[in-house]
Image (cartoon, rainbow, N blue to C red; front, side, top):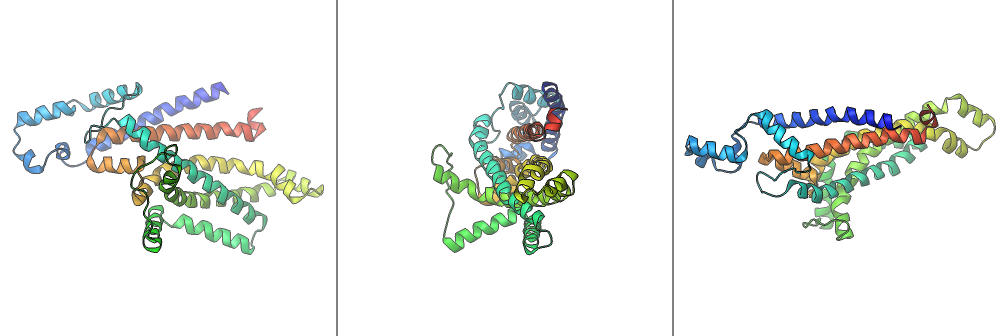
Length: 318
């Protein structure tokens, strides 16, 4: 097991390295003058070459790209993510404060996906070609087709115009004000959870269909076991493996989808901060948030792989 974990971690290192290099180059390739973040175009026009060179040197933008990346990556390895170009705030503190809200949204959305999607998938598989199966398929197709940010905007507009509801403006952590925090994260988590529930329902349905055709399921039924025993003791544990694999993919969906959905809801999370940083060309902030996203994604996929051995004894026993 330890050898397996070490192998997965070794694979994760080049993955994270590649992601950070890619976002570093993308941010440097953006069109426009990097000084436009700090100065008006009229001020940049009248700058002398020496003044411009001095400002670029102060920002560290006069060094070769390899040196810039190496400096940032070296500091990141020690836990020093630097400060925001634009606001001067500590990036580590910003990620700690806003990352907690994004983590709540991601965890809550996956819980919603499992609590909604798994029962729907089971019901659909147990009663194929029935009314319940048709309703479940309609649910899955509907929420797979609707863009998350568009659904989020509809919910926001409905709450504002229908119930005169406005989400809290001031950010609050769950340990500070649980009710206000729930109002902040509930909307984005629900939108993400509905879309993920559609994936879980479809995967659970197709996986159970395959398992129901296996010999051990037919044998259990032939022995006269109750259908609930056949389902929960024999079929479902084996059918859950593809669903758990999908959950690792859905985490990436939650991370990527939260960027636009947090923007739609105005949620003070990492996704909203990432968009603001990209618009403002706050390169250090964007690079650091993408680094955190990639580490979380790789870590969660490792946990999904390790969970196989707990669910399926064949993997644990070799």
